[in-house]
Length: 323
Image (tube, rainbow, N blue to C red; front, side):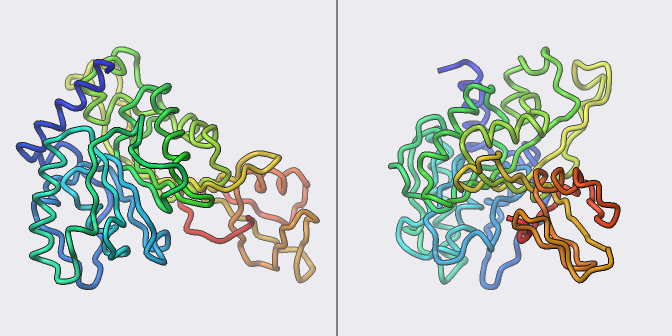
């Protein structure tokens, strides 16, 4: 095992035995769902940087994989949508974290009349070699874990997620990113990497690795400030902004002209006709914005039409659009 992975396991072993509220701090509010009560201990052990639970991904009681179980909060939230035995699989390499999550499930069962702890199947394993068969999962997720990996290990983790997903299955990720780039000295600090800070990649590198694993459609759903690494507290000469990003990667076939990556751009036609058809499957109705992937945005911009407005990336995409 690489030493940085051992350091990571040690950090989260301690966090399992003694919950550390400040270890990670999610930048999104908890879902408020009818009849869902999240035990306070799960909230204290919410070691994530965003949310991977999105109701529109979870219709039809899907099979769900969650890697890096933490206190079990997101496992419980996923089980809310898949109320059957073993529907939600939680995988973690740290035995103490699995035991803590299992204990928390008992508390969740006491607080939620609809919940049965058998809905959640906790397994020891790691993201680089998932203990699941090929093509068995509808929705896979991880929160503030993959940024810990080196690039080579991140490629392996994404490949494993792709392997276990069914066709058109969804991988939902929440990770820190850093477009400034993290200095080498901080990247090599194994404790900072374990704390979800110094492994943060520039967003484009992160997206390239996801599409490189084979995902044909990628949605950037949210992007927010997360942390500042400042001189004096960290070995840096300048402030370094770390953001959190929420992404959904869909196991769609890869288009011949490359992946469809949605970053919150739209196209609006305001010419003299009722609509504009680009002849490639994209119809823009008069003065009605259409969500477009970056590839389509570039193609429409290249037409040189002055009556089509292409918005910049908002880093917020909520479905629909050109593809």
